[in-house]
Image: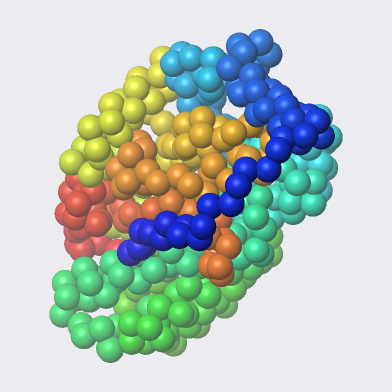
Length: 432
């Protein structure tokens, strides 16, 4: 809990006011002119405020990058409909960053074009490169989706992450396993065995490290930690290792194609595993259901929140969620996915909480405004609030009011089952 800062009154004797000479008056007028210029930069509704939007719009991550960008676009439309930022409309300078090299280059070029802030990126590996370039060029980087711990553990003042970190999502998976699954299995926490498989990239490594940390913290047994290269892994060796270690729960930090391959191999092996928890938005998508068919039923998914119970949102958050879904359906058709919720919620917090409170469009002023944001839980459509970790934190710029949820595929449909305050159904353990 933060403590209020109480300032003691200055009890020193008041000194006589010095005579204001010509130089002092000149400095005062210059300062006043600077403040007036800062105010005018927002109040004069002339040119739009251009924000960089950097996402993978081609390549293997195009679906998720496009979906997250759609959320940003809907937030931009909705905020502009309310008058924008102090009367100035927001415009997006959209760039495609399908890989690390393009992420760095496009971030650098956006900074050269004068954008004060960049939103992105969904992918952790691309985010690390793009945010590094933004940091070196003094531009605010506002991450809406990537989860690798390293995004906010480098001590960069300019980098902020709206969503949960990999460690947070690993903690949610471990909590669900020990608090919900273990009692249902009639297994003590000290006897519960959890294995984790993960892609050997920054995202997967964060989840793997998080599960190992949670094992030491909560006291469950780690039944194996298996990194893999998605380009070459057949999962035959990992399946043999799981057959030997016999975990009760397997956590898989995978993307779409490799996640589907692993689930298929796991089902075919008929191992006595009681539950599988997928750790990526890909496990939630219709694309995964199409790849797996009936094999997806019973799979749990620990990931970022969307479509949570209305009671978990504030009245304002609920109204914003309904507006977001309505605008999304009208513009794109169908229902928004998790990535779109993250894009919308992250962009809305930027527009309202940072740009709307900043003294000017200078990156340092946007950064200072971001550090003062205090949005309660449930303020945003995905159920999150906003309060960023400070400079003294090992995760500077991390939103500590971001959280994860657990879904389960039941009869071909994803159902939010945990935590109870956000849930729309209950977990079923009839199938693995």
